[in-house]
Image (tube, rainbow, N blue to C red; front, side, top):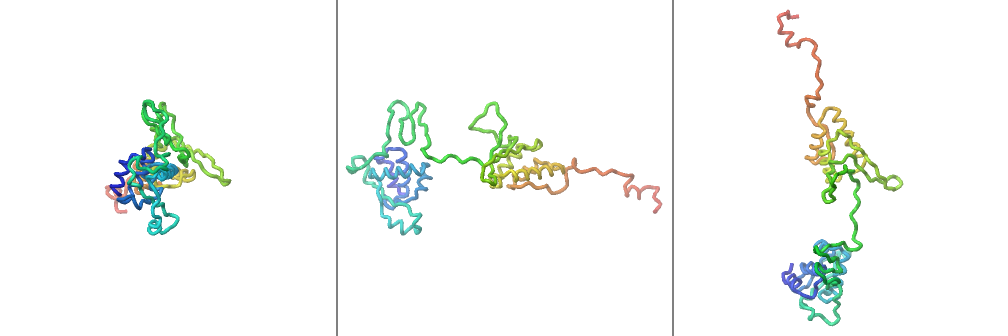
Length: 289
């Protein structure tokens, strides 16, 4: 990281668009003291600025058109990056340009200055993602940004009297599970699986979170197999909640029968027929036969 390049990027008054400034600062982070050898990958700039790739590329083109960035020696990249398909573009920062008066006559400032459409009170509307409002700046996503992927399955949550979308109910409160699976014809079908009433909700929710973290199979067949095992353990007299908690604590994706004797309440009582052998031999009536 070059302190000189970062200081120039902060102090220059040519680029005032917030997104363009973020991109310029990210590139300055990789430049040398004189602004040379600046060739980070676009993915790196996206991770640093939290701006989508399309906008990053547009702002780089705008910075080059404005004259504050220009193409550098690409031979340096060829030497340092062997694979041709992974070579980024080498740029040079024009650290000699600090004010708009230093720009050449053919400089294009479109894209590096914010376009103010509403000079009224509140945040100024900027064409790069901000809208005006009395409560400050409201961000909106870039057009064409990818949407969030659909979940593999979700839980049908019990209706709440005052639902809060920012704090949804826990998965442990679910009474059934819904799966999205693909059949043999390639069509997506929705399958609902009711949970048994004896299943401890909180322990089951923690166990599902462990399976999700371990990327265990999320299919109807897999969950049904777990429920069948738990029902067999319950019939044998084991504590289902303790079994689920053990799997969650130890990071297991399966459920297993506890080792050792069953609880006292589940151990069958033997019926006593008469006296024990010790009592028989110790009795006065015993004559050695």
